[in-house]
Amino acid sequence: MNEVLSGSPGKRVRWMDAALVVAICSCGSSGTPSTSEPVAQAPIAGRAQHAAAGRAGQQGGAVAGARASGAGTGGSAAAGPAAPVADGGRPAGGASGASGAAAAGASGAGAPAPAGQAGEAGIAGTAGAAAGGAGAPSTPWQWPTGEPEAFGIQRAALDRAADAIQRSTGNRYGMVVVRKGTLIYEKYWQGTADDRHIIYSCTKSWGSTLVGIAVTKGLLTVRDEVRKWIPMPAQGVAQGALLEHILTQSAHTTPPGRSFMYNSGYLLNTGAEVLGAAVGVTAHEFYQRELVQRMGLTMTWPQCPAGGCAGTRYPEGFIQFGNQPPEAPNAELPQSTVRDQAKLGWLWANNGVWEGEQIISPEYIAAGSKPGAGFRADYGYLWWIENAEQYAAIGGVGNCYVNVMPSKQLVIAVMGDDAGLGQGGGWAAFQSLVDQIEP
Image (cartoon, rainbow, N blue to C red; front, side, top):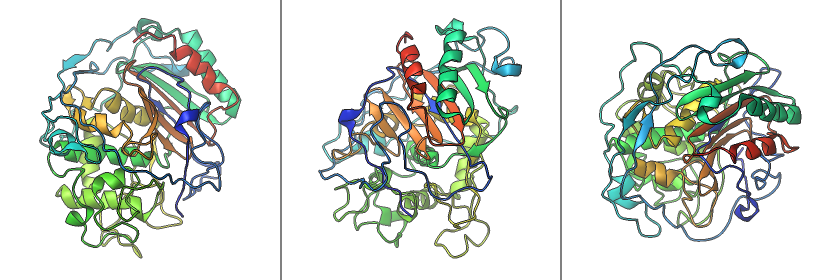
């Protein structure tokens, strides 16, 4: 079943002005994952109704291509592992890991692309500085930790905002706050930091991340035709559709790129098929090498077994970008900790730099975090656009939520077992808090 979401950018309010990443994941209390996402309510206060039941998610208009930035921007990498997090969610020790190592952003040569193009000289053709695979780290990567006061935030204020979120839903598992690459706050209402939960459609933004790595390595471009890599794509992929159309959920029309239709099934999963065909290994091997080993993820992303997923078009090693598993209805769904979702946000908030290495080009980050089509002002490359400075990965209409605001380098991860993110006032408390934080 395809999921159709709609939203009106004009109704959005700018609730944070900075680099904020919020990651929220959830699973049902029964322990049995659902293969379709709830669409009854929007994930944050002020969000236009992304998922009002029965509303069409299509809007007319022509594609306005993402603009590729000509010059890369410098990123900052967090310092190495620091003291572990103590009981009660408080990071032990002082503000260790605050400074980090400087990482120069990869410079691009591309001028802004014409409307309808992503810019071959910018994001599409950028080999970047991320050549080569990531080896397994000698020790498991962990967040540097520090006290929030050292980063301009009072712990008591974070406690109040977190409690407001929990009171407004009653079903949050926990929350992690990361600022400037350092974990400064952690609180759990149920379970521990090691617990994993279903991430639903946050797989989409992880998928965009993998595509960005492949683009940066020069293995493919967003302007590649789908049929260059997959001669017979799934039904519904329009003739002439580009990988960029898959990323912007606009590959279904003839000609492609004329309207938006939110999809979590075969059409979207064409992006994962293209990735697997382009990178020389299976999509799952690419994920393990480029993200799990590099970032120390514990996130599980089930793959098709030897011989492929029975009854589907998907080969061995396939991983789905949509929330719907290749073997419905009982296949395992991707699951993650709160901290892992915060890592996704930090990679994007830090302009594609991880531990001093530019693994995604600034040009791809810039294009992916901006509206990818003129008809959809609130959608990029499988990321929801909140405003000029804020974008988010969303799963389950809020079960998983990763909000990125690069200017303040702030990450908040919250996990729970329902789709609501506190429309009754929980997020308003965080909005008020974050608006006071200096970049």
